[in-house]
Amino acid sequence: MKKKLIVCGVILLVFAGLFMALTSGLSEGASVTLYGIDLSNIPNGSYTGVHTFRRWSNTLVVHVNENRITGIDIVSDVLGANVTNSSGEIFRRVIEAQNTIVDVVSGATVTSKAYLKAIENALSR
Image (cartoon, rainbow, N blue to C red; front, side):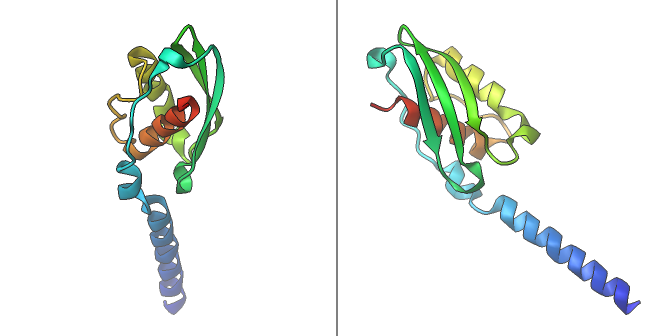
């Protein structure tokens, strides 16, 4: 009985640690300030942008042609982003709006903002 109690305690501690690791920094990540982008002076090309913040760090390549974002590729993804599959949706919104001032993906606010900040960092000149 004592052995089962110890095992349950260890399992509880592991889950508590994982929960804390996954949620640490959520409020800071959600409050990342986005400034938008001005594509009028961006020459044709591919631009690498990095956003570094805990597990939401990522590296993207933003492709620009004739002052328009034509594509966004992930070089290094946000840890756990494939679970939410938010990248495709946020990239679609950016390409449609031609700006980073877009609605974030519901349930993936911090991940969305991390991608948006990397896009801004790629195109800030």
